[in-house]
Structure formats: structure tokens, C-alpha cells
Length: 295
Image (tube, rainbow, N blue to C red; front, side):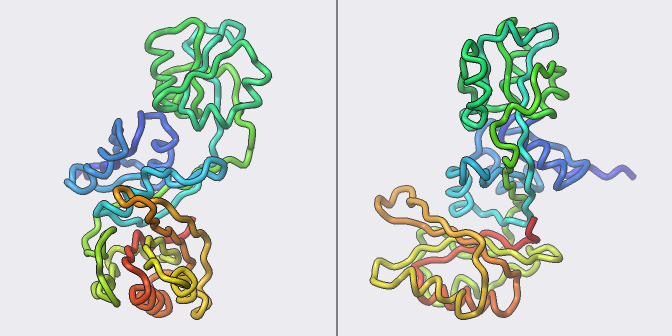
């Protein structure tokens, strides 16, 4: 009997870096492209896809703000992460030569990562576009004689584009971190809630944590009192739990209030559970975003 391939949502077009990451994390999956990030999360929650793969952080550009916000407000759970080396290529329709190119379309982040290329080619204008792979799809479909897209190798293959120049990114140590998401089956506390103590952790997400999980991502909001952040971070220091990332972001709809995002290097073990219970006592709210194997 033939088994249906896992349907995985991504934001962007086929041939994008998210497409490449999805197939690396879930080989032989069926990728479902979505125009908007919110649609990706909608599809997970309504069950039209089994999973999603989203970029969460780039080593040069930083956190993908919209995705960080959606992780807090949506009913999803991180089950894995993947690091993808980002290599940008100038890709045009067949027959187009580099000397004829006057416009290069791509996502604004990709354009910003190719500054040296544009400095060397002052006659080529950087034109913002909604998606890296989408830019290649556009220039090939329209057979634009004076334009190219900037995207990954997968986009050139997907749309039969011609690579005019490969590896045009400024920094060869350019990586994007991707999350594998599935629908959360356990309530873990939501942003803006007023849960106290360890209530948010009464039901632990054990069955959602894959084998080998050794990293946890959480979001929490501290109370506006002296020493609140110090007390929150001390719950990890007291248990010798290493934090690999901490970042704050403003809360939507709550001016001048902030959420802290923390990654720490422990899975679903006793020390981590005790730290989270302790954090629940000193923070205004806590949400476990995922427990997963580190990339």
C-alpha cells in the first residue's frame, strides 16, 4: 500500500530556502507553499498539513520577528531545528547574459547580504521582492531580458533558470536556523495569560518531545518589579543550566511591555522541569515553545 507523503507548510515559493530545509528535515515530504506566515500557522492549527518548517533566525540578520511573535500566540510546538548554509546566486531566464542585467530582484534580507556584489556591479539595481525563489519564478516566467533574481540553487532548478554568477553573498558563514513545527496537543500557557505558580506546567509535553531532545525554547514575561529579570534567570543558574540565547521583543497590543525568548540546553528532565516551575512562580507568564534535539 502506498503511504501518502507528509504535507509540510512553508512560507514562500517552491525552490526557496524553506523548501530546501523542509526536505532536509522531512525527506520525501510534500511541500505546501504559503503566501503569508500566518497562513503557515493557520494550516498547522486546522490540520490541513501535518507540520511546518519556518526560518526563525539568520546568523547575520537576526530573528525573524513575525515568526517569533506567532510562536507565542499560536497553538504549535517546536520539534526540531536545522541549520542551513545560505548561498545566494544571480539567476536569470535562459539566454540572458550578465552584461544585460540591470535589475536584480530578491527578498530585502537577501539583497542586503549581497552588498559587495552590487558595489562591484553599479549598473545593476537592487529591487526588493516578496521572496527569493519567487524572484526567480518571476524573471523566468516573464522572460525578462534585463533582470535576474537572487536565490538559492534550488530555485534555479525549480524554475529552469540560468545561474549567471554563483556564491554572491558577502559572508560565506551565512546560516539560517529553521524550526520544525507541529500542532501542540497539550496546553502550555498562552501569551498574556495570568497563570501563577506551576499551573502552566501541570501537564508536561512529554509525548511531543522527540527522542534525543536536549534543547528547550521558552517565552516568558517578567513582572514590572525590581530584580524581576535577575530572579527569572537565576532559576537556570541555580541548576547549572546553560542558556544558548536570550532576546526580548515587544508584545503586540501591549505598548512598552516585552517578552523574553530563551533557549536553554536541556531536554525534558528533572532539572529543566524544576527550573520551569520555579520560573512560573516569579514570571507573569511562561510558555514552552518546544523541546527538541539541537541542530
